[in-house]
Length: 176
Image 1 (cartoon, rainbow, N blue to C red):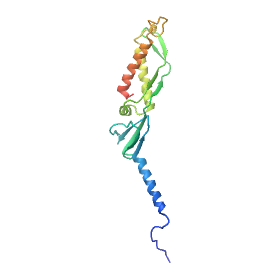
Image 2 (spheres, one colour):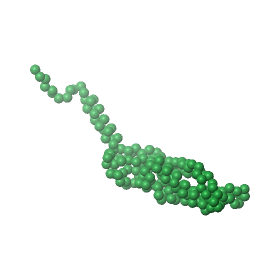
Image 3 (cartoon, rainbow, N blue to C red):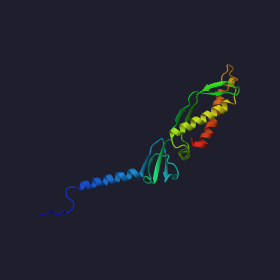
Image 4 (spheres, rainbow, N blue to C red):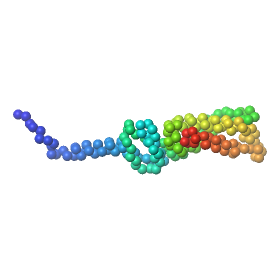
């Protein structure tokens, strides 16, 4: 004699509820993005930037992957220190110098399109700082860097020149 299944068993409604909860969590995890404090998020739809970046903290709705992809960047101040490198002054004297910079992502969309991530940003910033250092120091004599006469010392002005040239170019090129 065979038994006929008469439908769902009366003692297992929790199993259906558990399945519904798991399905809801999976759907929410693919369609809701939480933007954290100190973070900027750039959504891309099919690889193209989809509107403005999200800078204020809180939840945002999005299309699930592979339609929309989320790129997160730390929007807080970052530090960078170049290694000790040698360059020449205008009068041909070698100087060994290290530079220090504090930077942040100012234009997230440009940053994503031209840099992509923090590691690439550090490499690009190193090149920018090296170029700015060599250009500015090449316009100044050694005695303007190191001198016992404070009136002839122009170290603060040289630092400002390097910072201004590098900051302007970093913003235009990389959104930093």
